[in-house]
Structure formats: structure tokens, C-alpha cells
Length: 344
Image (cartoon, rainbow, N blue to C red; front, side):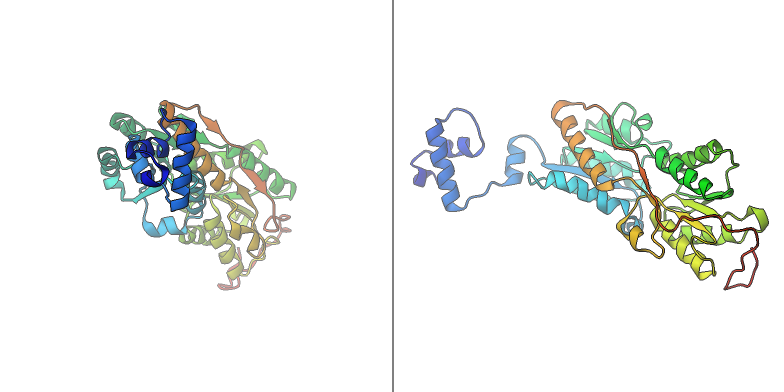
């Protein structure tokens, strides 16, 4: 390339790394030679020359099958990649158990494999903000600023979606509205349960039963069966789930038991995954824009890495997407389960 452009190798290095000190005409000649030769820059080499790894990190302390089934993470990761791919950077994903989580962050920091990390699945008592600060590892919290411990947080408000769902159900005549909750060690699962309870109480109703669903299909199905087995006035006529995966399983269970949705039971999910609009009936859900969340988190982490800090980012709140799985409360009278013959 230096020979073709008629310059020294050091001049080529200056031009390709966009360093000052070259005449515009010389730089243009070198870049033209590079284009003629089909040269492309090495992203890892560029990152190293600037003292950077050229990658962001994401450590997930979950079972691998749980990550694959959770619709949030594929969309969130796609959002992160939409930012990184524009400049050729990478996302380093570590899946580990809770006991190995600290060691994973320590390795990332010691090996300088990433320039910063995204902290998701924030827990009620979470050591990671303090850990990353101690390691000198730039970090952004994906979640409530109250758990960020001074780090930049990228969050959105769950409450408007739950309030809208409860209001719509109350307008439809529902008076017993249950909730299938996510794992209570996660702050966002507790926040969703609190949002549901606050909305039900604001409507002048006692909160219906709460059962754990674990954000999984199996958990959602088991909780739905237990709720539908309740007798008399204890049985809910509507269930709000903590995510779409458990809600979709609950929808299937209700139908297998001979209940019509929404005539006998209304169901609402959370996440508004692409599948939600194609269930039968289409699943009402809360849209939280996981893809946009991932992109915003990546941009915030970029700023933290470049400037040392960034202001908190609050995204548009979750918004209810009302669909046909919500309907009027059933008329008084028992409904018989098809598979058991039991009246509930």
C-alpha cells in the first residue's frame, strides 16, 4: 500500500488510524490506495491501539434453557448489537451460575476482554454495582435507579401498563383479579407485583390471589391450574401474568380445562413478544420495547466508558396492548372444567 501511494509505511499508519500530521492530499492518496487494494481495518488491532477491547460484556446468572425460553433477552441483545454492529464491536456473553458470577466479572476485568458491562436481572440484594466499581469496570444498570448504587441506570416504568390493564378489567366487570408473579429475588418481578397490587387497590378492590410463576411456561401453567382449582368467589375471573411466556402457558391450560378465553377467564401478559398477537385468542400484553432498551443501554455504557459517567435514562413507560384475551367478566355461576368434571 505504501508503494502504491508513494509514501512511507509510517505515513500509511497515520492515515489509516486517522492521526494528525499528514497533508490532506497525502492522506487522500493513501486512502485511495487502500480502497484500490480492498483493504479493511482490523477492528481488534484498532481497539488495542486505542487501549480498548472493542467489546461490551453481559453476564447472565441463569440456566441456559431459561435464557433461551425468555423472550426478553433475544430482543434486548439484538438492541445492543444494533449499536455495536455499526462500528464492528462485539458483545461478550457469559452464562454462569450464581456461585460463579463474581469470578466471571473478575475475569472480564483482569483480562481486559471488555470495555464495560451491562448489569441485568437486578436482585433485591445485589453485589454487582459495588463489585464492578471496585474492579474499575465501567457498568450500566438495566433497571430501577434505586438499585444502581450510583451507577447510570436505564429504566422504564411498569406501572402505567398495569394500571391500564386493571382499569380495563374493572370496566369489564372483573372483581377478582389474580397475579402470577416472577421470581421474587428479581427487583423487576417484585416491581411488577407491586404495580399490580397498587392498581387493584386503587380500583377499590382487594388484591386477588398471588402465585409464583417463575417467568417460565411450567411455572405459569402450574399457577394457572392452582388458581382455577379455587372454589366459589376465590376463583379469579382475570389473571395478570408477569411475562408473556407464563401467560401463554396459562392461556393453554385454561383452554385445555374447558374454559373459554375471555368469556370465562381474561388473561394479560407482559413483554408483548411477537407471539402474543398470534395466540388464540391474541394475548393482551404490556409492550416494554426490549430491543430499544438494549440499544439505549449500549449507548449509555458507551458514554460511561468515554466520559466516566452518564445521566440516568428513563425510557417510555410500558404500554398496554389490549387484545382479545381480555373481555367481560363471566355471568354469575360455576364453570365446569372439561378434563376433571370439577366445578370451580
